Image (cartoon, rainbow, N blue to C red; front, top):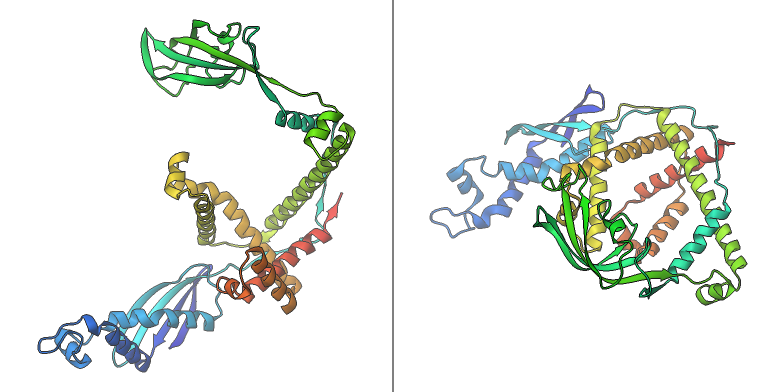
Length: 426
């Protein structure tokens, strides 16, 4: 097997001319014969017992050529790509140009490679870090969340329904005195004022009491999703079966002691403030990081092959499918729920995929510019960490990754640190 020539035919595209010698091709033909002879019937021989030369005489000398080429071409292409020093971003498009017993196999492989990248001004990027202050109203929201966890639902039987109450109702809707599909339910719980129903429906229940049966008149919105009902007046017959309301505890030391690990309300507030400050600090750091990433992508020059964006989007869809499978949901079921086709789903990831690919290319170029490397110790420690995090052995981890890949990821991480540490944060 040999690489005869390497020709750049376009931006990020090379054509390799590859030859597989007659001796190597003969070995592949023999392997193809041994692989397939068991299913070949030749008159005068038991199935699978016919000699190769007789099979070739009966069916033609080229009978095993296709299988032989399939057995050998992949290794030949991989070897040629390695010899040419190309870093591919997709499987090459291979064309077999000649197959001959005397001379072997000739082929062409069109290869799409990683682009050449230039990047400047990635050190000393100026960025403003804005940390949102924690206000008293933010603390009040945390207290409200705690109160929601301790709320009691009590039955109301001494007054009519009010906004904020939850009512249990039976209802049926009519248009022109005819019941319409989807307009009927029993024992339906509705929070008044939630906006769950069309305008006017919930307000019309306010003022009615448990046990009342009544009618309400509403008009469907002009843009309602059911065409027959859009803009139409309707009558709903209501049976109000129950009214409940939320009863909140007092936000005091007793409530805090009963529902948290703190002794006083002030202790809870102080802890809530501290956690919110930490969250805001982290959010500000993330915003700074995203700004820096956007800036280095902006400062990068490269003609990136579209296939790289496409491949990354496919990976993201596959990652989603894996997460869904872990929850017992198939991709077909997910797309049915979301009303998306496979192409539409993939398109939702395209912008994010494009940014990730460009960012990775920029960071990899910074690694080259700065001569950044990962030590053997760092690589070994990272592999151990991956094994521990996934509760598997190092040997199992190495079935899915390579040390070279881990080293590259570590180096890229160091490039990120370089960009962040050199940034001028205001």
